[in-house]
Length: 390
Image (cartoon, rainbow, N blue to C red; front, side):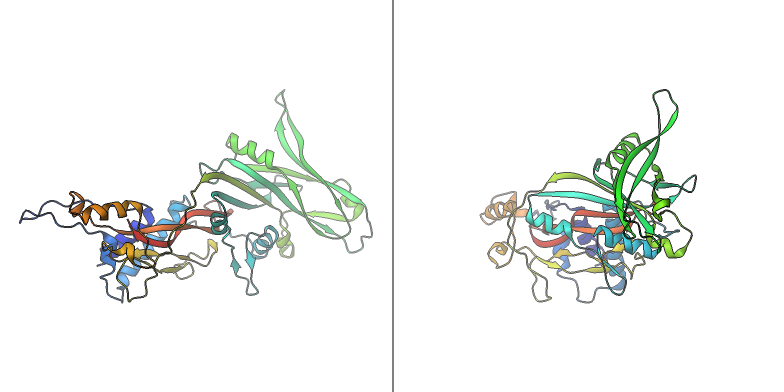
């Protein structure tokens, strides 16, 4: 029983529309109709044994790690201060921070897939600054998120400029980002890669674009961006760029780098009949709800949002008349097979339809990767929306 349930989960997570093939002939000379793992799910008892639940949770864990290209769950030894994390999330609009401090993430990937025929798989990587070689230097660890995500769509350094309480200046100051590079003669020199003139009326955040520099670093395989923060007029104006401070009160103003990388893929948008929901009363192919809380499995330390995963799966029988049942979904392949099987044409008489996902949707996640960088990723085909017969 546990094996059948796990088989159904693995069928879902593989993303393969499972087909059936005839089994070897029986002693009486007849070839039995082939069954499929998901069909057996409808025969399970209502109360699933604890061992089966544990198997399903383990399958969910492996699936999530696989989709995030992780071999194992990240070990968070030096988490970013909560104040800095929540502030970055608010500023970048990658999620909502509730009154209780919990982070909610909008399922942007789902809405994009519904509204457009072109679904874009994107990753938004947030890296907080570390102390550099001197007091005016900062270092950002960068990485290429996934082998195929090579296009840097956007990259900005976020820097907080603090004004003294006695400041009465209305003047503008220029903030510059300097990067060390090698000249044509091999000598090391500093190059201004980004600059911005900002007001000194009040303290606040400022963004400086660095897309070209990040793209060049990724293409060369470099893993860090070292910058010197220069503001020659700041002292006179009573302004101070907040860098990597030891003062806990300034942790929420720690500089950070936000990089968006993407690769576009075509996903045909088709209209389908909405599949059935399993309610314990029907035995035909339907969608079974299964939710895993990241807090319950001890993963809420590295997955910031969402709070859990809807690991829905498909179960139930696929009788020959399923196409005529309201709310059912039957593939073209299954329709053709049933047409010939009902008329006794071999080898179709020995093939049985299988209950499989017919529509999946994307899921947005905000998490720490193995380098303890914060990543927002839209994962395609993550959640089963509808089930039907293959």
